[in-house]
Image (cartoon, rainbow, N blue to C red; front, side, top):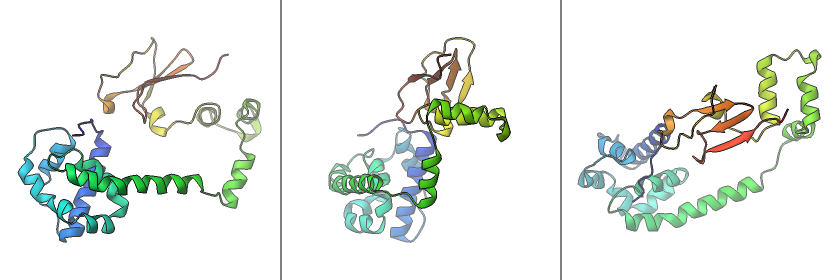
Length: 211
């Protein structure tokens, strides 16, 4: 069984997906999502009740896949956490795997339109070019805008949440690997960024500049 700890946002997404799939199949709302929520948060649940609610995924998997193709990855992630769904997990996996292949191929072969191409052509990651923009008084950039430009163009790309959850530290930050993900923070200390909140959930350190 998959017992990985999910963050709050992922729990909401999975819960919403299953309830939508349930409604698509039965044409009515799932009246009690308690056990489903317990599964997603690694709490005790009534296996008989939950199996009864989601039995249609087992018995009519083909139609579930056809009618909910966009959501099969989320469906798969949920049923890997439920007892007695092993056979269904194995049956669904090839479709999830193929969907991932299609996604990667589409992403690899994606072409930019003329507007995006123009932006790409004028965008420079060369340090001197970026600093020239930051130091151009004619652009009337605010300190916040200069900081954003520096972080986006002179630094490995990060998600907005990585900076929203960042604090300036007066001492060397400690790793927060044992702290719940939703309660972690990132830190800036002595010209170094310390990331506890990352997409891959691995602690990382980046030096922003040497001078």
